[in-house]
Length: 328
Image 1 (spheres, rainbow, N blue to C red):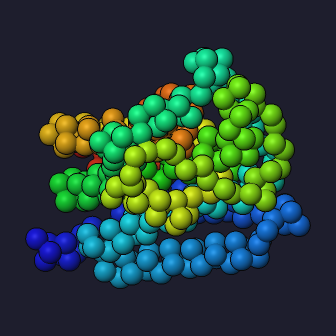
Image 2 (image 1 turned 90 degrees about the horizontal axis):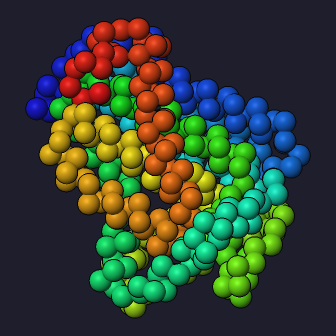
Image 3 (image 1 turned 90 degrees about the vertical axis):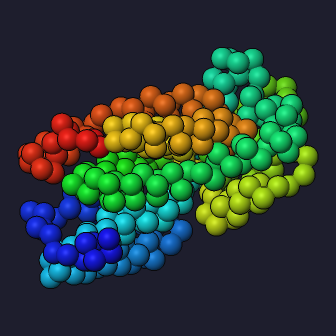
């Protein structure tokens, strides 16, 4: 099998569209940095990092052109997917410049539900037999992305480029929203306004508070299990006050389920429990309001439809974009 991956394949025409999407986002955010250069915290470093990303992308294209095979194709797509964890906290560097809008979302949540579910959920059900499955669901997010990517690479390589494009375009559209929409979610907003205000249903505007603060609200549970500590580690690794609305965890995992369904019903059924837990856990661990989850479901489906359509239009190829074959 490994030798098959090293056998030469017919290279795709032009650059992979996943790289085109990445370069567009890189240029767009670079322009935003330049326009707001004096307001940014470390603009020169951000620009240099983007230059480095472009250089590595070009090198990977060169390697692929010299030796086109499944492994070098995986390197090209895999590099862009791996960078998504870099682009996520990067959104904070942009939206921290704008007045925070969480008070509007918390008020909408209060109007719809009469309380703050993200505040009460874990407090009503703190038992470890509930909290650990919630934490498991939340940390399953990146493994689910890896599973669907590797599944298509092994089982449906003819659609591997398309899957990379669908995922990266969806992420970048979410990131553009996060760059411009400063909503941080309950785990950051509630500590900023104080528990007494949350309980009383009072949600003051905090202005540019998150330009200078990034404190997380720990959620209540009985004991700290294995998956709880994994969530804590992920927060310490790169969680910032950003990216609350809509929930990309819910949106992207919805896209993963749709991709899985088009390829393998059995794979979808295996992923389904993790998907359900993930959607619920985003509220349980106070990362999102329920309205973020609802928007995540809707946006995930719409982004799936849009990105598949965009790929077919941009490739205009029955091999690279034909949705009649299994897997797309």
